[in-house]
Length: 300
Ligand SMILES: NC(=O)c1ccc[n+]([C@@H]2O[C@H](COP(=O)([O-])OP(=O)(O)OC[C@H]3O[C@@H](n4cnc5c(N)ncnc54)[C@H](O)[C@@H]3O)[C@@H](O)[C@H]2O)c1
Image (tube, rainbow, N blue to C red; front, top):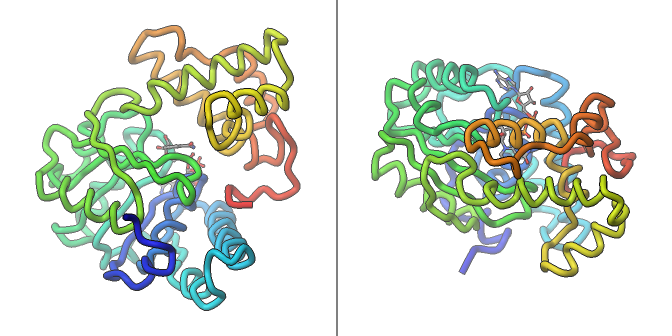
């Protein structure tokens, strides 16, 4: 049985950090703060940090208005979040979750810098979608503490997290990771350090197929979004989901997986490139397949 939001607030408190305040980082920070952990949200961009914090706060305000959290618990969760642009502020963290740009050099560099700041017992989690966990772990002098934790988007709502060990991940780090995720109310599935893990091997070709169906005129954005979840039991349609994921991220993930797997089903259809060139990235830019007044990253 997974804990309710209220029960999570009373569990053992840790100090955690999330690196990157974008779509995934702010979603993961929401999960951590909701569980009562003191949560540092770190980004190099002040603007992205502000938007990330607004997204987290917006999610808790909505949870209170829907009666999913008491007003007191909502305020406590907001109070647990600390925004920072200083890596040195993360010195007391028990767990660090990395959700910065999908760039191997950047991810490795952050682990190397954090090695000098946090205790040797701190767990390093990476939310990479397409890079090798082993490769990212090589940035740390202690690769045994690095574990891949691939959250589904939107992270505060989706229960599944894929857990992928690198070649040098220690058993203690894997076990502590699974226990930690369980305490957050997440269901973890262990997978291998392979391109796309489990979920993106299916999700990316499926999203591409839906875009191809749209390009072929098989249906409209609205009709495909109505038909596909209705038929397959998904919580939302492919275009609503892509607007949350971000077309830039979809393009990057699909291209990287194509490059590694050489399977044409992963190659992004031409519409993806046109939308990215036009800046129609989805919710984060206010326009994707749909238009949005509220550019907070998730939750409303
Ligand atoms: N979007 C998705 O659906 C999704 C799902 C699962 C995993 N992921 C993975 O999660 C990671 C983040 O993706 P996203 O969609 O949140 O990206 P995003 O572009 O929305 O956010 C990335 C954030 O990282 C910040 N950043 C860049 N360099 C930094 C640095 N040196 N230090 C701190 N912050 C830095 C940026 O300012 C930005 O706010 C990627 O590895 C991606 O592959 C994405």
